[in-house]
Length: 399
Figure 1 (cartoon, rainbow, N blue to C red):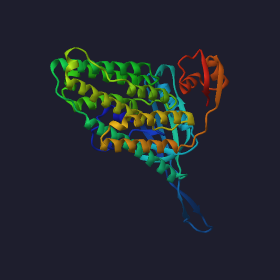
Figure 2 (figure 1 turned 30 degrees about the vertical axis):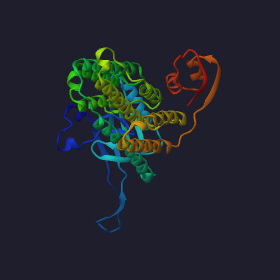
Figure 3 (figure 1 turned 90 degrees about the vertical axis):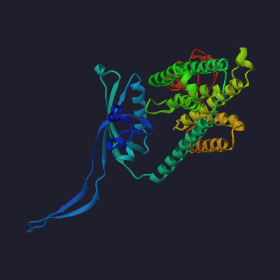
Figure 4 (figure 1 turned 180 degrees about the horizontal axis):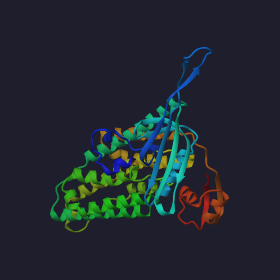
């Protein structure tokens, strides 16, 4: 992400409008300047008795791309760690360069600068080198990710356009509004306890607060209600807000997916006998379930460290999609199948090492088990989805 773009509208024309948000391996960061060093290799030949030398061109010098990446905010340290992890991978990857576009590069070196007087702020000076190694394979992998992202977005667009509400009486509208408010409050609670970046929690909760304040206006236009709910959930996949780390995704995706298995809400009083109210509640339930499905599928498109994390997420996503398929019309059904196929392709093509597994018979604290497996305790808890860190038993997974 570019610091220039923070202060300017995204609708700007000209060169600012053509700049792209900076990212490497999908990890976004702020940039305010760059330096690119290039040239040509020359060999000068001098001869006795000759006043003019010959210069032989030996080809282009390899470029050096130098960026200073900034991680800013209350959770800047998590963003820093995610970027350093991406930089430390040995294989080349795509760099989205704000000024130069997409570059196939390898990270050569980096320097981290932090200080107490600049809390919530980190600068990382990075040098990238261009490379041709496995560029064709990288392009194919990128095409697969783009296809999955595109299929997910298409499914969400169809879900949004397919939603409609029937006319309700004043009592019916009040009952329907109460159901919607309850679901938004439930989402607020889920996000508040989820292991996601603070900036993302604040953004989602802010959008929920705004939706609750304008609920009467939003409900007056079905299309606006659908787009509002979708925008709230899609904040979880917006890398410009924050990035959920891959180790935290299994638990986040599982919690969201559980919301699609809940029974449809009921109302009491006169509204309970109003057919349109019941129809609208069912339609809203279907809308939310499908938007959640879009969100968890988009979240699942990531690079994972172990087969266990990848397979757990893939199972949750495909089971959720399959459960919703029977109630879809032909267009939605096809879009959902395209989404399912592309995300399965992207994730199953990743070559991952299986995690170390242990069977714990006598319950032990998570901190003890993490130490034995030489893991960070937070990583251990997230990977194994542990609810009670003091009493861990059964099968556990290490790094």
